[in-house]
Image 1 (cartoon, rainbow, N blue to C red):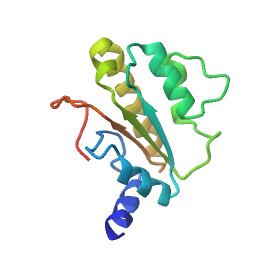
Image 2: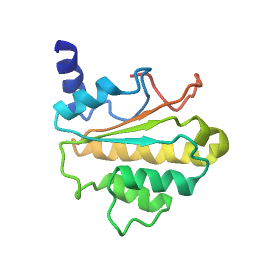
Image 3: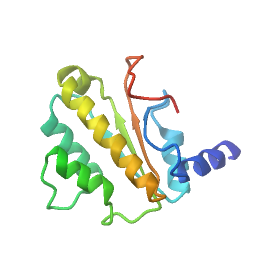
Image 4: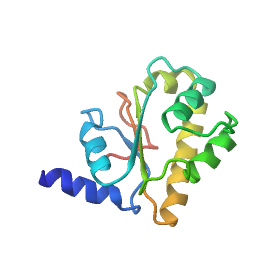
Length: 147
């Protein structure tokens, strides 16, 4: 319980939010702590995802994007920086099984990480936490930190 409270307090802070490696437990503790902190939690299973279009479709569904979402990078950035249709104190996005997307469309994978990281920074500037946890079995990806 103490561990969950500490984790909830950390997730509730916008400082430090961004893109991280998903812990080995698949984010169960993070999801529970985030919910306890009043954050919206979205899980995206990227198993079998091989391209940008499928990635955008899965993220849009998990984050409950509005019907006007344009299914392109600019629209993703717009939606991530204004989550007004899903009121919460902040959000946690868990991208599980991202290895296939990374291998099949590395350029798009890296573009997605850049957009997610920029959205987290922009929201942090407004005092709103946006955490992204990416499940990869491969180590050494320079764009992700350990949580």
